[in-house]
Length: 314
Ligand code: HMG
Ligand code: MG
Image (cartoon, rainbow, N blue to C red; front, top):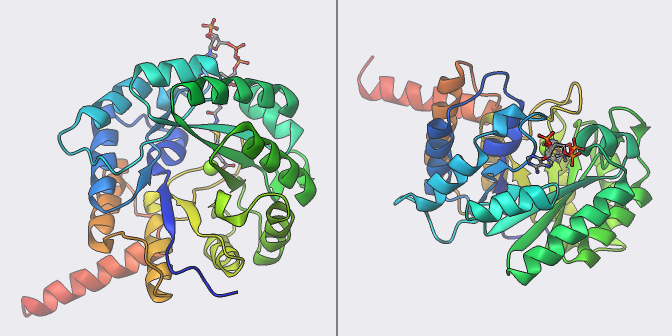
């Protein structure tokens, strides 16, 4: 199959990335990061999550961050700022703060569902249905996640048919897109393609997105394998930030800089300005006091610095 000519990137660093940082990042830094990501041309930026602050203290400033982003003079009206909402309580708080798009997050593994949101898959689907019904009455768009689409940290390999069944139920509920999460980054092109084939048999590929963590360094290969199957929406995280507090050993999402470099090499349009993206990655990495996890960012920045030295005759 020909690769898609265009890909949509959903930036999840401010949520998936920063939810897993040991240090609590101040709201003002989160807002500045989100604004820089919007300036770089990302069409959707997951801003925060309306979950219990006892479970994820890193996101306790959710309302403050979302309100500041939406009220900012730098806000880009064409950019979507979805936020995670596990239940009606989170949904109501998100709407109160101005959310116009939310995301619900289920799993294909029972143990992960219990550890992550403290309920079974069936119970979570009931809670999500209530969120989707309320959201549709308010004309708020709902995206959905399925976690553990390849493997679960507690149960091991996950049957692709179970992933497909949950994805179908989320779509039937009224979600506009289902993002397939390789939460612990255990997938390889072969297992990801098997899982996608099962999902695409029951959900049109254009309603599916890939959300690949890079724990084993396979995320870029898995994106390429997904492009080959016609997938055209991918989640990624600036500087490769991320993980999941309820999946031990899960490391960051695929780095946005790495994905943009891949897409540029394949002449696939993403609308992202790589220089502004690199600057956003440097901004958050320097705040966190560590090097970016993006290999492409490190190489491109080293090349930029070498070019500057040449220009200055050093
Ligand atoms: P629970 O303890 O079962 O909830 O938690 P509950 O309904 O029994 O309520 C207990 C307390 O939590 C009550 O407060 C509620 O008011 C409060 P108390 O009376 O004790 O003071 N509460 C809330 N507070 C704020 N916001 C809410 C909310 N709901 C209840 N929305 C709950 C259930 C879902 C809340 C909890 O398990 C939770 O917050 N989990 C969050 C887990 C999380 O954020 N995980 C990371 C995101 S998912 C992810 O990273 C995967 C993804 O990236 C895809 C992939 O990679 O696979 C998306
Ligand atoms: Mg994730």
